[in-house]
Length: 74
Image (cartoon, rainbow, N blue to C red; front, side):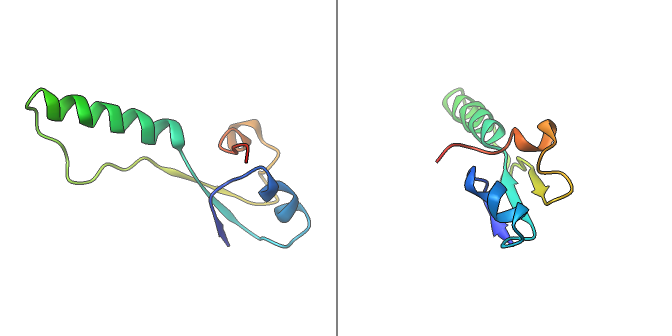
């Protein structure tokens, strides 16, 4: 099991070196970071925790564009 999704993970999954990779959702992380900063600066409350999601990648779905969009360049 690997955590994160560099482009090299595709080869590692396809060759069987890695069975599963858990990919973060960087766009959501950035979005909620900016929203939280704005809320703080304008005196609004900020949740203690904000879930930004994750995607599980394996051999069965690594080629799916809806899954592979979470890969990032190294």
